[in-house]
Length: 508
Length: 98
Image: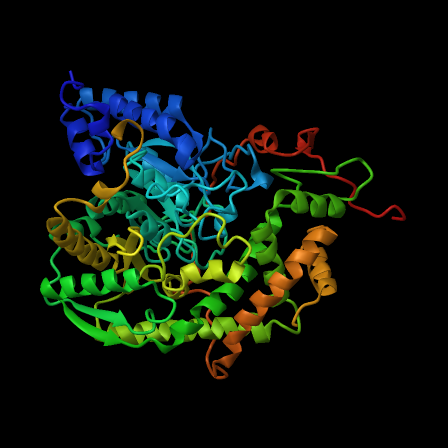
């Protein structure tokens, strides 16, 4: 009955909230919605390479089960039947979890991540696992052992990272929703360069259980979507206390959905971080950022310039703290209990096998960070590097505390530049690290932050993101600002930013 | 120069990564540049500042001592590189002379 209402090309352009509404009212069924997205993936993923694994049969089976529940009048979740792409660093039994690494090639996890469990319990349909920089270390997905993902805006360019697969899948209409994880910007930076929405909840706001750890004090799963309300609905599904993650916050989840629906920022105090702009920022990024801030002012927000003097040290502090944590976390890839093992010839010792396996199984960036971390934690250097970085982390948190005593949220560009060409920065790790300049402070302080589309840079026609940062557990403020900006910009543009995306496949 | 190729080789051994000569030649100068850049943290006067290891205040978490089923052994061993007698089979762990 439904094909006469909506073609597959129309289905894949619907928002998650519209899909869920139509599935619940039985105007569409979950199976045809899932099939439309699987067909889209089959059609264009050869070009985009957002997915490492497509779980088609199981997705169709779970969609059919959801349709049956709805037909039987059973209670279903607010996003029931909506397809979703899961970053391949969260476990999902029955599908491989590779983390974009050869060391975990074809590894089948024995348990579901809490985020995965919540998605399934809320009747979402998981289409497959998305590409990422190896163990989420990178800003371009070029560090994936399985090849880079391409930016749907220009396939010669990077889709950001580490969650480039999730962001590209959402931008390219392969899935209306995706899950990302953000350690230093891995949700927000890909969102910015693909013209999509990405939110990093307050640290502890969503569970890390079943998320293969990169840096345990920084990692945080969060939603990726094409609209602010869709992101809020997904946020609500995955967030909340989890006894399996002892850093998970045992407090109510902020009402992010109500905030996204309200979009009211009148009287809100918005701080512009003076340190996040100027030299090194592309002119089009600065232009769209300042236009967005003016727009927020016209909607009734009060704009205040705020200085956070230690933010300039966030990048060096992060690239000591993260390698230190990752060198410890990745020590578990020892070739004994899971994953790759090479050189086990009956003569080589366990230690030799471990060293040969890690040599063969890890890519260059993972090796770089493990070695930097080993150095920063070694006696004699510990105080000067890791210890000092931890003190700088305190000062960055204090900058935030001081700023949030004056303003409700802080804003900045999400990234200094728009999407760059694939291959351009692979041999220059420092230039690659600069992509996370604006996003890192929020991870170090553990507060909530997000990136929202702010337009296209005039010089290259590529998306620019506006970053919003809010105090811990004030995640709802992100959605309030994002929804206000989205509504104002879309009314100025006459539609969503992604309407100007180059069309591919059957949409061409 | 903060880090020589020999030092990188030593750190790699500590981290149990057997780097090739060719990799060392590429990695050592890259790591040197990274370390020089991150050393900027030392410019901050922070002597009396307490270190932060975790962004938000944490208290110890207690829970009831309840029985939970553990994962089935077969399922865990299915992901192992080698298994024998329902256990992980590992390479030699002692030296020849031991």
